[in-house]
Image 1 (cartoon, rainbow, N blue to C red):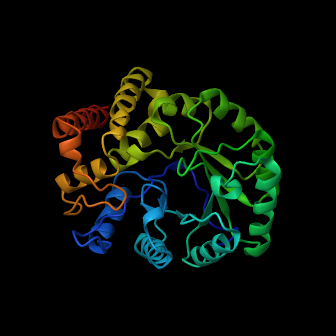
Image 2: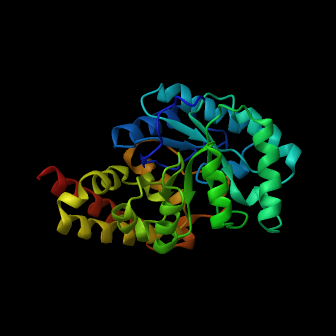
Length: 312
């Protein structure tokens, strides 16, 4: 990771981790998933994140997962990694230093671990400064307002502090609030830090406001549709509005057993065989009735919009 690495923007899937029925990582399935992301218009990949079930992976597994994604992506698009799950500072330094060596283009810090008891900006800065001092100066960094174990949004002061340090290149924003996103765009203007919205409900509005892409969970279903919306939506406003509505309504189904729901989709299309998760220990079909019918509609709508875009 160096300051010369490529910019991180566009449609950036939060990667799934396929597992075998034995609960081990399915690396052949993961390789096929990487190829699917790339062939469907992804601009970069976010590996070892919450969607990757990083809280349920050992440090050795997180390192191996990150290194595998970097190796198989082979420089075709940038890769960023997190794997930052600890509250104890010594444990954070151990895992971040380990993840910094997998060869990714940026290392992503989780904001709630920088202030695990939600004490405020003083604690946030103290923890952050200790981490920055321990990591290589040329290591490009990002921030992730991961909602687990609790969602800690950055204050304007904290965001400005990070942006003006010159060390940070991205924030995965989970404010889910367009006014906050717009304010953050202004706060980071002229700095290396880019705001990447992760909320489908405001994705199109945020793109129109200047957010350079999208970083939400439904990039695991149709990253190409988000990519078209970001790159060409303004040239086709009516279709863009219709597509944005479909994307919002599809993303509501995240509550129906994600990430197993996304794995069910990839099982259907042959990316990998199992929908096994470590984070979910129940049968999603039993808990969420008519789940396959919901997925049928998402798939049908996705194909309809792909056909309409292809006919332009």
